[in-house]
Structure formats: structure tokens, C-alpha cells
Length: 233
Length: 233
DNA sequence: CGATAGCGGAATCACCCATTCCGTTTGTGC
DNA sequence: GCACAAACGGAATGGGTGATTCCGCTATCG
Image (cartoon, rainbow over all chains, first blue to last red; front, side, top):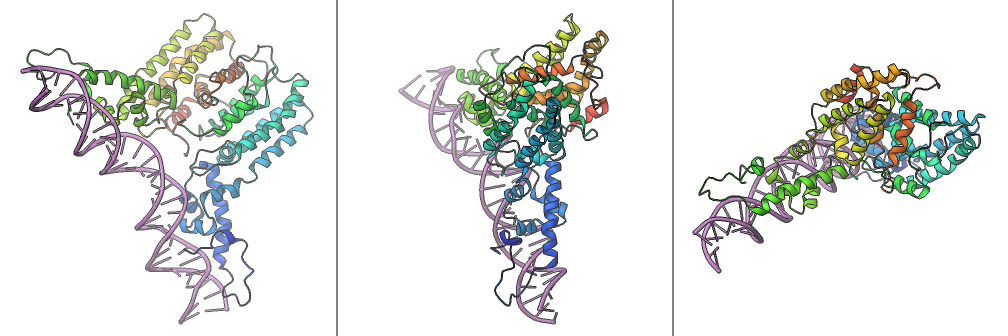
């Protein structure tokens, strides 16, 4: 095996004197091309897309994928490294909005739109993940996200614009639901907005009575997030 | 390989005279026990549960499963044969309720509760299914279901109790969303009711403005249902 | 040109699960 | 009890999927 292929793809250079070869031009191109391809494929098919899909999309063979990345997991991490920070930033953006209710609406719309556009993102933010490889500090991330969201919800509660009893932990189930609906109809890629509207209208302060079941408390929330695995149970 | 094992398991009895062997007592028990085990396992884990799970639950070996059923699919069909009729019956029950809005609420609650209780049921009603085996006339079933639901929604629309623009095809995405949320927290098996309430309150006639995106039309609906496959796309 | 980094993609490996096979156990009829 | 086939358990098999590795071939660089 080549041995030191993947890792130092971008580092290279520092060869003592008389380095026999610099680096082939086409090889350099491929790295960039692969990242792009992976981005597209994961966005479209989710993290369970195969490396062959990605290679094909990049117009190369699978071997080349491994010359640029040590494993599938590494690709995913490369792409979705900042996913969580990005989501947290969305919360901050939302907090910057004056109107407490509009802030919440904006948060959901932006975040959902991102996840609708990029299925891999949604799966990354969702926990241990559905693909073989995926895993991560998602419990931590989720907990952080909830903590960050707290002010958004508290502000809305204080302003009386959000339904009684709605808490930040409600976002997990809500995004789970939205996730399931993003790809329902190819002909109708924005269909999810319809159901987000339904949900938001349900979240809004209302005279229609209390919610029938309490939300997840933080412990249950964390538990739910960490065992978030696909199908079987 | 007894040959004629599976099919006639429950028929027996009428042994003229001098039949070599009647049927072993324990064998008869196992059939019933297996059905029960399958019911429980599919309810808990969904249709992707393995036959080994079922065998274990029944306290027998896999071989015995095959002595009672020709294949996994046959088990599924045995158990969920009447699933669709049952769902249609729920619609009829709902139509029997005077109040048009309460009828809709009742329909969703009953149906969702059934699917929450039995994950296999939800998957069966959901289309081609997530497991290797599953498949079926689900497009047809779904179309039938929508047709059957039509009166329920039309009546509510006529009474002005349902939000403008909500149609029977909306049930597909809604149940898809609910499906994703049934098992979120083991500590909180009724959590889904919280989100169903949110959705129902969104569906109710409201002064909060129109929905942002049109629903699936019947064609798109059918398309969506038939390609309802799991993750990857 | 000649050496060789890089390449494509077939072959491997690792899992997973339905289904089949077969030696062993266990009711049954005598 | 006894003989025997029905039933049984569960290991072996077969097919499928997808990540990862290997290797002969090719294109680039000096």
C-alpha cells in the first residue's frame, strides 16, 4: 500500500532537497473535485451514499477517493465539521431578530431549509447517524444546541408569543419530523414548508388548550439523542 | 423438510381412522406462539426485525419458524393482512362522528395510536417498506385511503372547521412525520401526542394565513407513495 | 524517453440476514 | 419401554451491500 497517501494530501511540500517529484497536476485537481462531488452526493442522498457514488460523481475511480481520504468517515467529518457551529450561529442570527416570534420562525425556516437542501447535514445534526460510519459527539452537540436555544424560547415565552409549555427540547422531535418529509416528493421540493407552517402555527401562543404530554426533559432528551439510531431499535 | 409443513398447520383434526400420525402437541403450540412472538417483535422493532429475533422471542429456533411459515414475507402478510381494511374502517368510524372537526381529530388519534403501538403496522401502511422483503399494493392502498378520506376532509371544509387548502393527501406527509417520532423516547412513549396536537392545531381552521405551498396532487401523491423507500434515494 | 505518482476499478473483506440442511430430541402409537 | 418419524435447534449456506485494498496500466514530469 502506498502508505502515506491520504493524510498529507494537502500538507506535502517539506521534502528535504532534491525532491524527485513535486505533485502531479491532475492529482491536485482531483482533491478539490472530490470534495465537491462528496458535497453534492451527500446533500442529495444523505450519508448513506456509497463511495462509488461519490467517485462516479467526481468522474474518478474509488481508488482515487482513498488517495485523498483515509476513510468514508474522514470525508464526512471534513464536510460536516462545522455543521454544528453553523447551526449554533443560526441561533445567534435568530436572536438578533427583534420580534421574539419572528426570531423563532426564522430559526426554524433557516435551519430546516439548510437541512432540506443538504440531507447529509440533517443526518449529521441528528445523532449517531443512519449510515454505517457516522457517529460523533452528537449528544454533546445536541445538548449544546438546546442550551443555546433556551434564550430564544425563553424570550418568546416572556413575550407571550409562544404556546405554553413549549421548550427548547421540542426542537429535536420537530426536526426529526421535518427530516422525514424533506424528500417526499421530488416534484415538490418545498413541500416541507407546508408542514413546518402547520407546526409553527401549533407552536404559536394559542387559545386552543394545553399540549397533552410534557416535552422531553433534558435527561430524556439526551437519552433520546444518543440512541438516535436508524430503524430497528 | 417435511414438505407440506407450513400451510396446513391449523387445519388438522379430521383424522378418518388409522391415520399414521395426528400432529404433535408441541408443534401445534408453536404455531400460535410464533404468531404471537412475531406480533410483538414486529410491533417493537418494525418489519426489519430478523427471523432470529422472532424465533428467540418465541423460544424456538429459526428452523421452526420455517416449519410454520414459508418465508418472512408470509409472516408479515399473515399479520398485517387486514391492516389496510382496518385503517379504512377507522375512517368510517371517524365519519360516524357528528362533529366534523372531532371526526378528523379522532381519525388521526386512533390511527396514530395504532401505529405508535405497532411499528410494523406503520411500516406496512407506509409503502414498499423498509425491510428487504416487504412490498405490496401500497400505492393502490394509499390511493384508496385518500379516496376514502376525501369525504372526511370535504365535510370539515364545508363546515369551515378545517384550514383552507388542507386536503386528504396531506395525511401522507403527516403520518410520515408522526412515524418518525413514535419511538423517540422510550421513557415517553406518548410523546407523539404532543406533536400530533401541534399538527392538528395547525390543520384547524385558522386566521393565521394560508399555507405556503400547495399539497401534493393525486399524481404526485401516488408517485411519492410508490417510491417511498428508506434512506438513500 | 523513463521512472513513477496516480489512476481505475476489480477483487477482498466484513457484515447482515433470509433460507436451508442435518444431526439430535421428543411425542406417539404399540 | 420401544421404534420411529415428526419437530426441533441452530450451524451452514447463499446472496446482497458497501467499505477498503491491491495491482497492472497510464499520464505527467524532468
